[in-house]
Image (cartoon, rainbow, N blue to C red; front, side, top):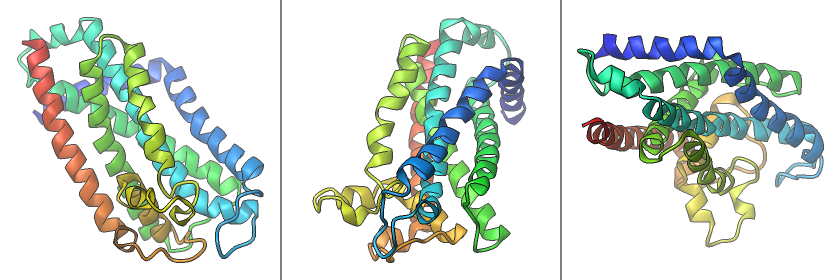
Amino acid sequence: MAHDSWVVAKRNLRRMTRIPEIVVFGLMQPVMFVLLFSFVMGGAIQIPGTQASSSAYTQFLMAGIFAQTVTFAVAGASAGVAEDMTKGLVDRFRSLPMTRSAVLVGRTVADLVQTAFTLLVLAMVALLVGWRIHEGVLKALGAFALLLLLGYAFSWIGALIGLSVRSPEAATSAGLIWLFPLTFISNAFVPISSMPGWLQPIAYWNPFSATVQACRDLFGNQVGPVDHAWPMQHASLVSVGWSLIIMAVFSWLSVRKYRSAVG
């Protein structure tokens, strides 16, 4: 299975290099978010315990932008799987002596490589606008590992969506529409304490919030007062737990859906 998955992954990676627009447009959105939030909104948004400034907000913001970037890769995964299904590529794979689940594993691994490249470029842009790592290289690498784990887990959600719709266009819309409330009902852009009381528990137990808080801790970007909610105090553990649960559930559902779809 590992060899079959790697063959499929290489096929998808070659396609990305031959169509560089996929990578370029995938980079533009997160870079625009960094620039707009840092320079346009940063001076107006005040984190409790600090003065409103673009510098302080950039430190607070970047973990959220990193996490948003890896989860928004769902749209690409869902569209890619849907396109393979509609163009008959899957039917060709069926005629080969290969593990059926390798098609999905290869697709998600290729998306993971693209996400890692996007994170690298985004981190460089963040450094240019004033973001800094304060806890050393090893902890920073741990933060990026958590981000990639979350991104890989979410790519399986994208795979399931791609298998469940009839066109790449529908897959792109279905892959994005539910991500906006997930990312905004979190600690990515504003402190959870600023939200209505009934919404705060949802935000605290949001898997997105756990990864964002874990990254802030590992990067040394904790701005404002410490949040004493249990998921935030054990953010790295909660982040890993959520990612593994999402991966286990949606990989099983995706492989099951794939097998029924291809007969």
